[in-house]
Amino acid sequence: MDSFDIKVMAEENQRKAFEIINDIQIVSCWESIGAVPGLVGSLSTGLLMKHRDIDFHIYSFPVDIKKSFEAIAKIAEHPRIIHIEYTNLLDTDEACIEWHALYEDKDKMHWQIDMIHIEKGSKYDGYFENVARRINEVLTPEMRMAILSLKYFTPDDVSIMGIEYYKAVIKDGVRTYPEFLEWRKKYPVTGIEEWCP
Image (tube, rainbow, N blue to C red; front, side, top):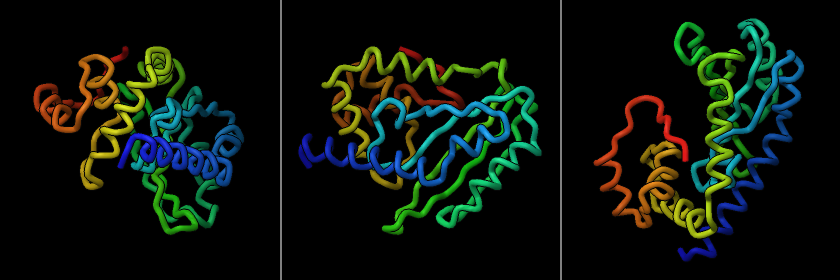
């Protein structure tokens, strides 16, 4: 597939992702409990490719578990939400509740929606939003195309964090998938990757 087709595929998936956000009314569901949701991850940087995931960080103080469940209950009522997982990490440095929902679109394709409900004022408050802002500031059209191409050539059964692509391309000049595989061997990620351009 050439770069034009990869770009078209990315744009189409990003368009679909925003349709899903509007369809479920994710933002208003979280705002209904007084929380502040914000888009993060690959969709926020225009770097969503073929891995269909949508990432939100949601902030409130404190994080009230009951209210968090209330917001998720509204989302779970949508007929296209077919699965939801919950993890309580409030007593860790991450100070959050993780929600992972699965949305099945009209073409039977699955989209993962990660909603991380974070305690305002905690260690990661605003951190990843700042990373996304910095990526948007430094990204050139050539870098963007390199990242989308690396994501396209990654096999579907291989799980790689978006930040790995961004760091490899922006910081270390990686441009091909074989180079990227070698780069990953040299710089394995253990835990949360805190690199920011």
